[in-house]
Length: 233
Image (cartoon, rainbow, N blue to C red; front, side, top):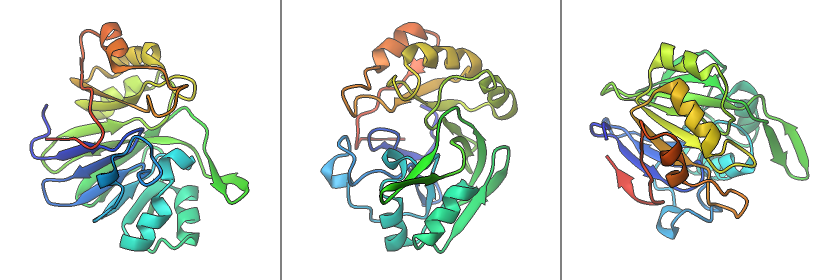
């Protein structure tokens, strides 16, 4: 791949740990401790400089509060989600909204649209968590990675291509709650990336989409099937 010194680890589901060339550690959608796909050795978070949260569902922010209380990372998310995490003890929130760009932990991060719901399970209640989003991350070495969050395919992925041109895209493929490989293949036509990293599949039986299906449907794109806990660079 073209990571050029970025250390990328898939932790299962939609959770990734990114270690930047400058030595910063970022978790995207931090669900590790209760994540059945996450290897045991990865369930202890030793360092976290920033958390990038796409939306408030439990399988995406399940460990955000615990990690925040332990490490006090900078939390990037839509305004309502950041405000909720602040109430839970976050001391460093950096809220934003769709179309906005900021630099956190040395990464230029742009919040983009996602087509999904967003409610936060708070005790026995579901509270409003803003809208679901994705992120285009541009690293100090020039590499651009798009984490789509939980989403269906939407036509404005072509705008993401035209404005930000990410070379690497992380797309959900599990079906039922997100895109299946069929929709993800169409997303590849809109985004025209060099590499696709499938995510949000296999965690639970209903998430039936698989990377080999996506590769068959999108033969012009290189599909990178990662293994939870294995780091690529």
